[in-house]
Image 1: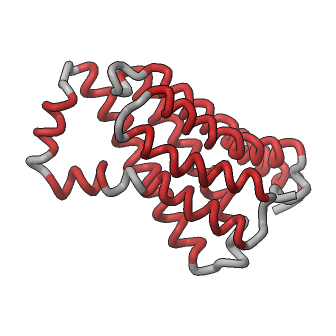
Image 2: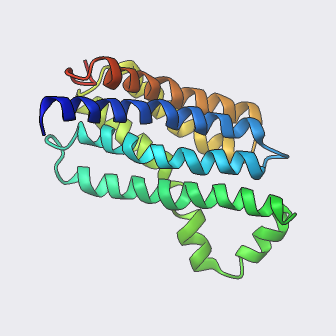
Length: 199
């Protein structure tokens, strides 16, 4: 890969680091009684497309220092992102357009426990759990500065604490805690493409 191609690649990663948390955070502003709804579900689903290169960029920082964790952790993170996050986005979208209540789809999903768990209830928690473990490893291996790693970990912890009770103000706080370090990494990729993101 030549220098120009590498620089473009870094800027693409940086753009993903910016777009992912912005779409992700915007989705909660469209909650309807704790549900994502049409617009929120759409924004959440689209954000997950950009979370994939975000995970790739962050996990790549550990590729040399944690060669076994890197592929397994990345795969689980993408599973939580692509399957869990997208499934919850589509759930909000379809339940809204077909006027399906929360309790109705919960009762219906209970009839298909394995599929519901694989697509939603097991995969969904892997998104924040992956971020939490990733933040710990990034700090422990000293490949990033301390404060973004701490905020990333706090955001990962706050995420399920806000989504399970569906408290909107807590959801915005969790989104902000995740957005600050991710955006910081994004600007590093965009404007300091020849340097390491950890510097």
